[in-house]
Structures are given as structure tokens and as C-alpha cells.
Image 1 (cartoon, protein in one colour):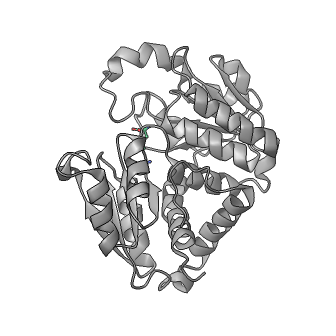
Image 2 (tube, rainbow, N blue to C red):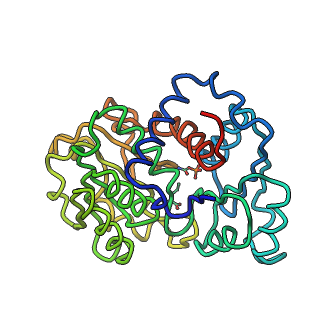
Length: 304
Ligand code: CP
Ligand code: NVA
């Protein structure tokens, strides 16, 4: 049984196959309309969500499966009953668990004590479903992911970690440009570097925007992630030089822009860029649905 907890469970060939399956589902949805018939999937959320909640729910229905949404009213897992009991109970009823949690260890506990595949739909450290959708989106615009240079600007957070790890597996060069003190987790960067050594990807972290001149794609995310109580006003001045705006695109030659959303317009990205010709942001949001369906079919062994 395979889980998707960190995104490193898949090697390069498997990730490319996953992206190809996502594209096939997108192109021929009817062909997959019964691929999860008879399967029930729990999607549980300790944190808010628009895209993840809706794309899993609608996506599972489009594959003929059934989803059960558990909302934040249950609070953090492990409070009302242990993660172990939660996982053991759910495993008796459902075929997979999709979970958005505060602490990555909760996902590890669900996988350890349950007997069905567990999918990480965002935790403090990773957002693999997002990164897989992002690389599917890039691959719709660039024929060889091994030749793409991806720049991430902003906070060294869960999304940046998953971009580093996924890029490293796929052979995509990834540079993170973050203010001092807001870089990625050092251990995760080292793990990504070890994967990059195998794929040939070049990874880097810098606080200097000049590091991304000549790059192809720029990516950003909120400067304050869910679960972080820092007021946005407190970090605005520090992060503002890392905003994605038209001047940055003109200076660097970057042609495409991604953002996982929710976006804070005029903070990490301007409306001019978000709504402009370089933006692939709504394709990216749509692709969450297709790549997650590819993930579920792959983990549940559905017919495809
Ligand atoms: N990108 C993303 O995961 O969006 P939501 O938080 O709305 O699910
Ligand atoms: N880094 C953001 C991503 C939201 C999809 C957060 O964790 O809040």
C-alpha cells in the first residue's frame, strides 16, 4: 500500500506517469467516470480550504466514487480521540483518507495506524498535491521539465518545500528567493539536494532577486501561512521586495507565473500580473482536480 505523505514516495518515472495520467483524465474525463465506483474516501480538514476541499469532492464524484467531508468542527485530530483510534475506525469504512493537518506527525500517525492509503492535502511541512498540480501545469507549457528554471519568491514554507522536492525529482532547476530568516527548512533542502544530485537539477536558496534572471517561471505564496499567528502588517515591509509584479517580469524575462492561492493581491502578487497574460494561476487551480484524481487512481489501483 502506498501513501502520499511527503511527495517523495514517487520516483521520476512514477511522477511523470502521474502527470501523464492527470493530462489523460483532463482530456478524456468520460473514460474515467467509473474508475472509483464503489470507493468511499474521507477528506478531513483541520484548516480552512477552498480549492482542496472542492477539487477532491468534485473530483471523486467525477470518478464515480463517494467522498465524506469532515470539517474543522472536530478540531485538531487527537483531541476527542487518539489519532490511532481515528485511523483504525476510518479504515473500517473508507478506502482512502485525504487529510489537511497542522502537524505532519498526524499524517504519519494516520498512515501508521490505519490500513488505507493516506494523502497529505497540506501540512506544516509539505503540500504535495499542490506541487504535483504545479508541475503538471508547467509541463502543459514546456515540453521538457528538465530544461525549466523555476523561481519561488517569498516565504520558505510548505509549498516551497514541495516545489523543491518535486522539482528535484523531476530534474527542474528550482531557486528559492526568500528574505533572510525566512528560508526553507534546512533538512528538507538537504533532502531535495540529494534527490537533485540524482536528477541533475540545480537547487539554490538566495535572498537576492538577481539570482532569478533568465528564469522561466515565477511562483509565490502567502507571506504568512495558516497556523502562523504573525500579523501580515508585521512582515509586509520585509517581504515587499519579493513581490511578483510587472517590473520583476520585465527585469528577469520570466514568462509565466504561478500561485497556489489563496492570493493576497497587491502583497505577494499584483493584480496586474495575476490577471495578466503571464498568469497560469487558474489553469493551476483547475489542475488540482485532475492531478488529484490521478493520485487517487494510482494509490487505489483503479482501472486506467
Ligand atoms: N492551494 C490550496 O490548497 O488552496 P486551499 O487552501 O483553498 O485548499
Ligand atoms: N502556505 C500556505 C498554502 C495555502 C494553500 C499555507 O499553508 O497557508
